[in-house]
Length: 345
Image 1 (tube, helix red, strand yellow):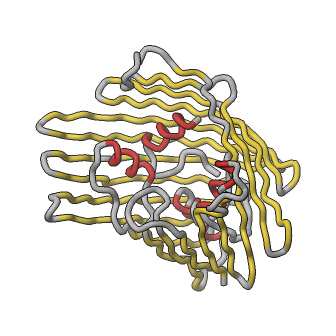
Image 2 (tube, one colour):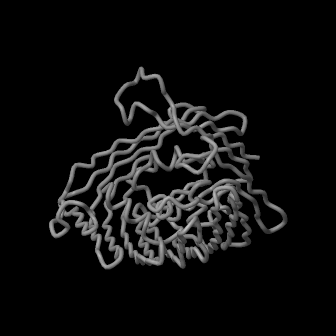
Image 3 (cartoon, helix red, strand yellow):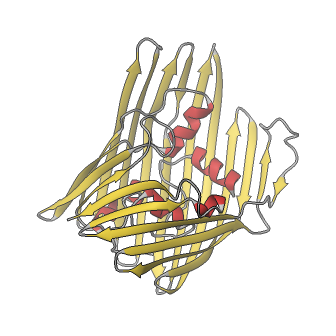
């Protein structure tokens, strides 16, 4: 599943291609999203970057994601959403497209720097716009990124469309064009069951010393969740990815299964946990790899446990990922990681 997730990120949409049963709670963070593997329709301050209409399901809030300065995964970011009359609007600083991050890292181009996201919504729809432009004169590097998103959420169904209209970067002797890329998804709820379908398609090109390498990515994901009770979910997904990199193919197929829980242990503390792994059909065939590309790796071990805690008081929520879930050491030096602070007002 890890290889499939990588291809999905490279694949196309500024959207996360695995959409995530609806909650009106405003606990929100990367830590929460990452702790609930496979949960579809998850309403959170992070999932508004796939489905912007989720701002209508969250209260007015300000949120901060702790992390390093820079452009690495897990970096610092944060923003707010407020309500005025019949509309909601907000701004967010520092959130990067995982699609752009993956593509530019491969070719060592300048990443999105100081991106700004603007949100606006009314009724059951919302839009957002992400802008980033930077230049390093001494290093002779620069980049520009423009991303637009639209979403609509109704009582039992929702959809979104995300477009990376511009994703360009330059360095001495090389140029990167990472767009256009488009992602779209649909989610339906029927009692205890939720179903989602997501598709992404994108193109990119790297020119170096007059040589051009084009890439095309396609990713399709289907998923189902069953919630026998509100706090527990389980389900499965089906993912397909195809990348064409200069005429060489990367084909991936996955059937992830997962089980998760989010439960208030006390009025002031929420516990979360999940497990996910591939089931039988998973395969990766990579013609760009050093090893023979005509042979596939099938159902490679990928079991992953994730867990986290949320502490609530006076409108504040402090979320964190439980580090022991990945290293097994409850007494390790890092107890909670990927911390975030959210205030709902």
